[in-house]
Image (cartoon, rainbow, N blue to C red; front, top):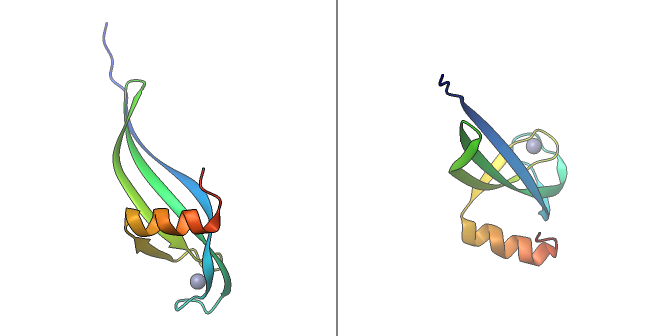
Length: 83
Ligand SMILES: [Zn+2]
C-alpha cells in the first residue's frame, strides 16, 4: 500500500532588528525586524526548500521590504544577532 503526502509550509526566522524606520504604509515608527522566510515543499516526511525570501518587516502593519540575501546578511551581522 502506498500513499503520498504533499504539503506546503512556510517557516519564518527572525534575525533581529534591521533598523529604526518610519513605515510608509502605516506611519508606525519603530524597529523593523529581519525575517528569513523559507517555503518548503513537504514530500512524504521530507521537507524540500523551494523558495527563500529575505525582507524586513514593519512591527505595526506587517508590511515588508524585500532585500537581497547579501543585504540581509550584512544587516543581520550589523544587528549582532545572526544565528
Ligand atoms: Zn507599517
